[in-house]
Amino acid sequence: MRIYQLVITIYLSLNNLLLQIYPKSLNRIRILKNDLIFDVGANIGVKTEYYRKNGWRVICFEPQKLLVEKLKQKFEGDDDVIIEHCGIGSEKSELLLKKSSTSHSQATFDAERRREVDLIRKNNFTFDEEEIVKVDTLDYMIKKHGLPKYIKIDVETFEIEVISGLSQKVDYLSFEYNNLQLENTLKIIDKLEKLKFSQFTYGVGEGFPYPWSKWFGIQEFKKSLEQKAHFNKVGGGDIYCM
Image (cartoon, rainbow, N blue to C red):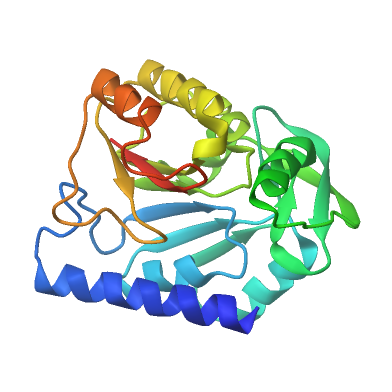
């Protein structure tokens, strides 16, 4: 866990340095101090730390009880971080969360889909733990906390269900992507198009798009995905849209 946190922290620090060097390094993404961020799949809060360093207010959504306790300890006393112990999905419910005792990052409501990816990548994670988790929707959380400027989604192959619970556009949204689930990714983009998202780009690794990242219209972006122009056969990253 410490190695994972160190690697991501270093990456985000370098990304933050780019923001200082290049005033437009978010490349058309404009998030200002005190803007609200939804961190869906907050995990141990590495990205939330990055958001707070930029002065953004954050709502963390994390289904794993153990990680919720870690988040509470990490951000104790910070009134601009709110932690919601819940999953986010297409409707309010309770779902079985499958977890791996060997990796806190491997937890999902869709274990079969996650396992397909892991088998191809030969990650060999075993979902040997589970817990029942309350699930809410993005629409419900927007009513509760207000409309965020940006929604980050990293939920281990459950992204389409999360976005299915959103009925209004926000300024910016990102979700995890991998080439092993192209069909699912295209379905997500179709849903986002209905919400009036029209510009898409790739984020490399864990950071925001680089200053030189190209933004695509929907059809051009789909074609780029189908040609796998930016990721190798088992590659992936984050897709950003606005």
